[in-house]
Image (cartoon, rainbow, N blue to C red):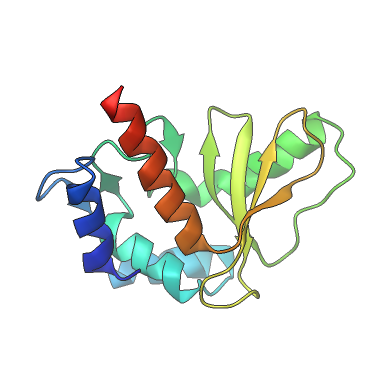
Amino acid sequence: MNKDTLISSLIDAQLCKQGEAKGCSQEEIAALEQSTGLSFPLQYREFLLAIGKRAGRLFQGTDIFLPAISGLKDEAINLLEENEEDFNLPKEAFVFSMHQGYEFNYFNTSEGDDPPVYQYVEGNGPPVLTWNSFSEFLNDSITLHSRSMEN
């Protein structure tokens, strides 16, 4: 899903008004990649360009935007250690979201342009493959947030 398609989807789902979404610059993305030592997959780059800083009502209450994402891997590692999980995040893992300090999502940068997304939820054991691609994660999130706005 490219930048324009993503923003249109948010507007169509009434999660965002025109001008409410704010993306990252190429320079900000490059700086984040440099600080993590990772090269981001294409679909995640599109996400950052489109809504890397703000997306209306999408993802409210979740640390998924810059600048909060820069420290999420350390927070995820601490959460795993606190829960005495017998699992270590792979070196190529990028933790791109954390919700309320008990749940996080990540992908491995080595798994293609639209990598699968793994989720850890405190108390449920090691992370599990939850979405087959970052695009699927985004589409499901938009659908879920849109439905919650209807109720």
